[in-house]
Image (tube, rainbow, N blue to C red; front, side):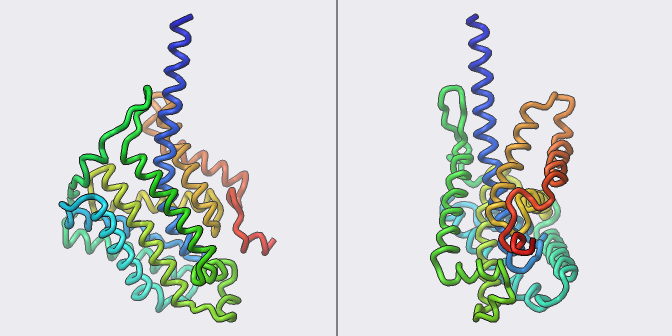
Length: 305
């Protein structure tokens, strides 16, 4: 009987430990997806160059290594936001009124340019950096270990989501961004300045990418030119899963993707764990087949029905 109870306790602890890990990973995915969803909501552009902002932030952390981590975080935010604004002004503004396919090709071109530029400047070999010895430590609560970096990831995500919600709901430019996401043409007729709204969406996306870059590099310690490819794919899948054009859907999709990934990693047999991503995207495909519009339908899409 005692052995059975012990087994049950261990199973419960294992479940809670994986839940903590899933929330942390889902928070990171939600940040990446939300940055992409902001731009998609206004421009109907899936910006695959968004992942390269994580790479830019990563190399900024390598070059600026030394100061305390809060200073590094703020510096990374500023650099990623500036790169995002430059990306919008130089690459996307001239083709803003072009077709969706042209915008998509432009995003791939920007991504290719940044990745190859990083290879020329820093070489294709990974760079390593240690952001903080404190963040890699853990707290122990019973049999559950909570990494300080995981706690920081969740805390930053919740704070940023709250601030973004207040910004979109309480400020003039935020309300204009919401109006542009629902009907950009009508918003412009009512006096919303397209340049301001789009530039702000890119800047906020850059800030979110900066946070995600900091957390990712703090977790892995490695920076390389193509480090943004996998995160941007995850962000895109989270957007599709949550509902194209829905900011809430992007967040929900990110958390759900994190939960699926961690659950499969924990409970798949050892012989199948190397196929975790295949199972993950198989589940995502099943959800999309059952609900093609995503989990949360954007208001713009509801109005079309």
